[in-house]
Each structure stands twice: as structure tokens, then as C-alpha cells.
Image 1 (cartoon, rainbow, N blue to C red):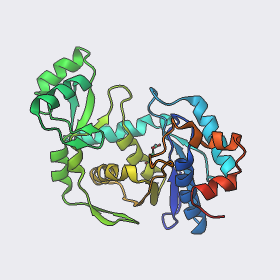
Image 2 (cartoon, protein in one colour):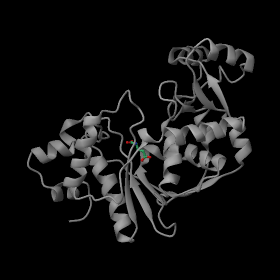
Image 3 (cartoon, rainbow, N blue to C red):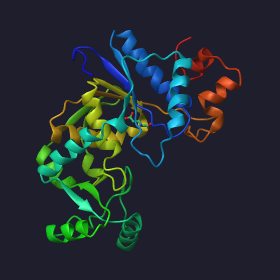
Image 4 (spheres, rainbow, N blue to C red):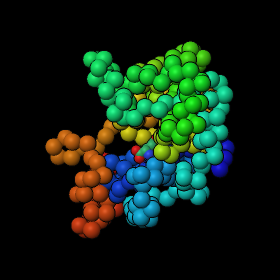
Length: 285
Ligand code: GLU
């Protein structure tokens, strides 16, 4: 779906891995309000590529919870599970540029290597990959692939950063940022189990949906550096970002889907109204 590029387009992109909580409500309301205030569009995208964690029943509940909250989205809901070809094409393009390599490591291999080296810089998805498979000869990699060893596709971060040069992006709250994706190391872009990854899918889809302002939680701030790099490599436009604060419980802990009391479902069942929830999230009323 394409909208006029002069118009603000925001989105809410939940993963159906559990019930929505107050933190999701805040994010969705912020994105929806912003589009409505500026006469733009607000889109809904279901990030359901991880079939090990997503459950179809959560999708129905999630749509119902959003409707109950009074959130109305424009156009059809985009499901990432139906977009695998687009992610594959992006992966092929990066591979064609010589920026990906197959990685055969298991989690255990990585932890053993990281443990042996003594120091383990942390990336956004855990310890930075120590580069075990980066130097494999193509003959060895092909041999392992043809013998059926499962593999992921990793980005050769040093080569990618060299190719892209210095990049910037803007956070509405934090101001101008210099892309520091190198801190994440050689991230996985095509997972062994699902063939794609959050970073690749979100970057491809924000362009596909013509999103001009990405509103999401502060926990994804570091991920945006990777997304900015992927945009540069794939020749995609860069939206403006707005990473909002994360809501916490009374003990100051981040809300999570496992905290049943903070789910919208639970709040509704305990008699709260949609306006109560909007007020608890700190928005209007
Ligand atoms: N699907 C992600 C989540 O539920 C959000 C992704 C994004 O907003 O970019 O945490």
C-alpha cells in the first residue's frame, strides 16, 4: 500500500506472542494520535514471522483489544508472514553485494567461543558474534550447506559499514544520531529457522508501507542503527524515529507480556474503561 509521501504515516507493529499490555497501548495510541492530529495515516502491521513464538489466537485478541481502546487503523492489516518473498529478495540483494556469509554456529558454539575469549562485548541480541564462520572458505561453506548443516545468514558488519560510509538518522526526542551499527557486530539477517529476521523484515516493511515516522519504545533505539544501515545498503528511504519511554510497574520494572495484571484484557475484565486505560497510559482525558 502506498500513500502520498508528503503525508505523515505512522504504524504500530506488535508481535502476536502474548496479550497486549499498557505499554503497547501507549505506543499504539501515540502513533495513532500523531497520524490523526496531522491528517495522516496510521497503519497496523502484525510481526508474525517467528512461528516458534507467535500464536494465531493472539491476533484476534490483539485486534479486539485495539478496537476496544478506540484505535482505528487505515487500510488492511499487513501480516509479515505473507511477505517472505520480499524479505528473501532483500537478503538476495545483500548477498549479491558480498555482504552476507552463512553461519553454522549453534548458540552453544557461540557461548563457548565467547567464554574462551574472556571478554564478551554485548550487542543488542546478546553477545557480539565472535566471527567464527566469517573466514570460512566458500568451498567449506558449500560443503556444509550441501551436507544439510543448518545455517543462518549474517551481515559482515565491517564490510557493510565500509560500503555505507557515515550515516545519520533522527530521533524526535534524542535529536540527530550517527549510525553506530558496528556495535551490534555481525547480526543475523536470515535466521536458521525462519529464513528472515526482525531487523530485515521491519526495514523492508517500513518502506513498503511508506512509513514516515516510526514510533516505538526506547528498547529498540539500538536496533534503529542496524535498520539505518540496511536502508543505506538496500537503497531505501529513512523515516524519522521517535523512541518513547517505556512504561513500568509500581516497582519500576518494565512491563512485559507475562505480567497478566497489566494486560489490556485483564484491565477490561476488571472493569476499567478504555478512557481509564488511556489515562493510565498518560494520554489525553
Ligand atoms: N514487533 C516489535 C515488538 O512487538 C516492534 C517492532 C517495531 O516497532 O519496530 O516489540
